[in-house]
Length: 185
Image 1 (cartoon, rainbow, N blue to C red):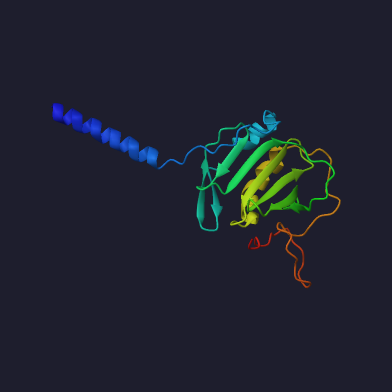
Image 2 (cartoon, rainbow, N blue to C red):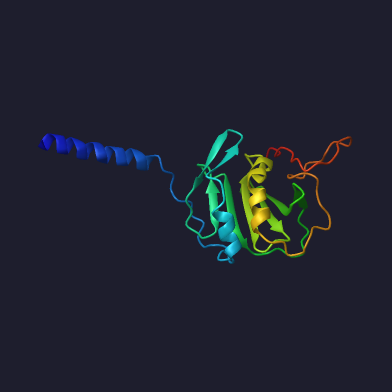
């Protein structure tokens, strides 16, 4: 009987070790955005998907250590932060995604990421996407939740771009809200 108990304990320890080995570590995003305690951020965060679909498959949602944040992928490929500083007048390119949410776009070549920040919304949401991914499909999966749960503040982009990445459209193309692929970089 003692051997059976010992075997059960060993099996439980091995099982727990295997389970923990499959878990990705918590993504360090502390401190939280300055307005992370906005109730609209809670509405957004609790409705985010458990996984995003990327070009090479599913990006599982990961635990983060800061309020009103989310991360997907291992390694982390997408980060969402709700409650960031609400942008005011800017020279950053702006586009209306799916004709619902205005997004400011900025590429950080040094970190190899795109930064997208909502414009005309309180609270503001920032989405950081690896340049290895096409940001359009990621926005497809998150835009409606941000549109529904973050109230408009009346500000709109005065000039908008036609594509998510700012790539030039062919001269004979009809602009649509469909994003282009992310350029290599």
